Amino acid sequence: MEITITETSPKDMLIFFKGKLDTMNARQVSADLEPVMDILSTTPKNITLDFSDLTYIASAGLRIILMLHKAINNQGATFIIKGMRPDVYEVFEVTGLTGSIIIK
Image (cartoon, rainbow, N blue to C red):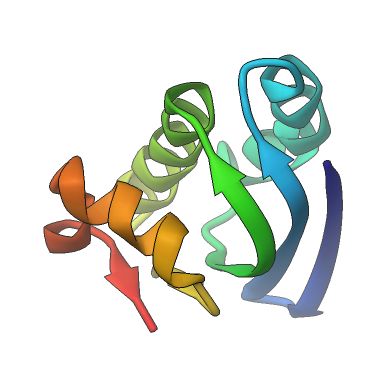
């Protein structure tokens, strides 16, 4: 699992995911996102997650995404997921998350 975090403007951040977000790497992904969570605790940022190269997501990965989503919503900022593959979208659809997260 590879994650690239880019601040695209003072108010916007893009997080690119590549590979599988599963139980085996969830702890590392959570640690990789810790700096983002720290920033969000003091500074509202609009976050876009780019899932165009995310090939799989497990429940442990969904938990991480939901924690990030909650932190962003608590700041009144925007949370968007883009580039989701059909099989990953299906996981979000089955869990009912397509109704609460903006997916483009």
